[in-house]
Every structure is written in structure tokens, then in C-alpha cells.
Length: 308
Image 1: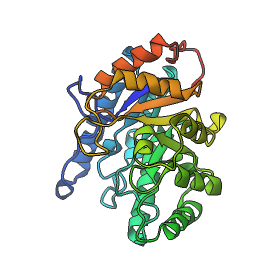
Image 2: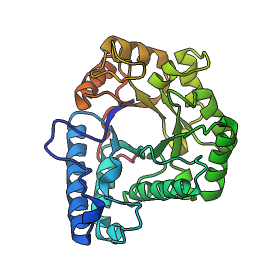
Image 3: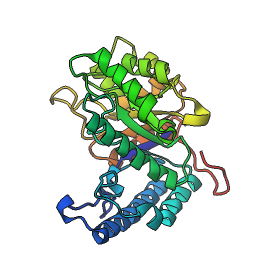
Image 4: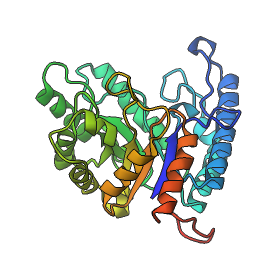
């Protein structure tokens, strides 16, 4: 298994999502921001390889206003070599990366403008993975969306958007995550049964919202939606409840006993685990040590090996 963390490395002095105000947009500012962001992303990936952290969620803002109509700069051509070099590095070191578009990406909104902007954002983020030369195991992770007073209609709109508006290049990367308030694992499984979208499993969300499935059963159900040759291993978001805080608040640092118990619940399932824990790579180091201790940490491949 691989261990990862999302977007920000707190040990480094750079960000891969630097941006600026829309009112200050210019081609020059955009070019400089993308150059800085890609350079920082490379540094983060190098840090991760050094510390055996082989799963990383890239921040959505690599290209400021990447899907906004104001952005007419040909960044795909200007930075093609840089994206390809990052992709080559990812493949060389047997890493896995993903994107998790922001909450404004809602495929089942009754507002057609929101849906159109959501599709454009998915196309933008997927295109970065394409520029890196990564296969369909690099995923775009979204939630099912809102309920809008009628969950059945909302699910039907999600399915219609998927079937009618998403290009194939997005479909092959898309995964849907169970959430903690509206759409449980069972409802995400309905989307899989209808359109074949894999279910990214969030253990903490499942603890908050479920249909009574024990954790080992829930993991088996989610894993069955992933096809290894196309999708790679099951992707998991892992966290736990912050003591004394409101229900659903993520813990600041990994609770190692809970994580060991969760690894036991996997019962041999091949999975890559993204830690949604506030201290980022600090907890990831501890999780790696646990997986190493139980013999389940992905070993580095030789540079001549094929990609994942």
C-alpha cells in the first residue's frame, strides 16, 4: 500500500498553489505563478520519494483560473515539458497522484451554469494528468453533491450529467466519495451500479453516515468497484474524530492505535491511503512506519521498472 497526504507539505518553504486576484489577471502573472507552482510540486514529490510517501493529492490551483474563461493563456503548450517531466518522475518512482476538485464542482446541481462550470473544472484538472502522461489510475475525486430537497432526482441528475456531458477522458479518471452528511456508501454504490464510477472510500465519513455496514464489509464493497487494470488499487481517505470536537471534525494528528486497527480491517485489500489529517506529512511518516512494521508498505521499484 501507498501512504499519502493532500496538497501541502509543511516541511517545505513553498506552495504549489500560489495565485492572485482575478482583477489582477495577466498572462505574465499567470506564467510566473504556474512556473513557481510546478517547481514547488517537483520539490514536494522529491521529498515524498525520499520519505517513501508514494501517494499525493495535487492541489487544484496549479494553474490559477485554470477553467475560468479569463484564462486564454496557452499554458498547456508553454508548460508541456514541465508537466511531462513531473509525470515521468511520478512513474519512475512508482507514485500515485490524484486531484480533488473544490466543493463548487457539483454534477447534480439544478443550476445548469454550475454544472457547466463543474464539467469545465474536471476537464481542466484531468488535462493536467494527461499532460503528465499518467494513465487512468490517476484519479479525479468528487462527491455526489447536494440533495436539493429530492435525493432521487439529484441522483438522476448526477447520472445524466455523467452520461451526457462528461468527456471520456474525464470519465476514466472520475471516482465518487461517500460523504458524512448526504450520500452514504450505499448511495455511491448505486452510482457505480448505474454508470460504473468507482467508489473512493472515506472511513471517517462512513463512521458518520452509514447503513449499518461494519468497516471490513464496507471496505470490501468499495474495493469491488475498482478494476485494477484500469483503476489501480482502491483509494481510501483516512481520518478519525478529533476528541472533544463537533462530530465530523478531523483529528490533528494520527492516532496510531486506531490506524493499526483500520489496517487490520482491510484484511488483505490492496489500497492506497490518503491521510486527511491536519499535520500532513508528520502523520504520514507515522503511518508509513506502521505499514512497514506489518509488511504492507509499497516497496520502491527500480528505475527500469514499468509504471504502476
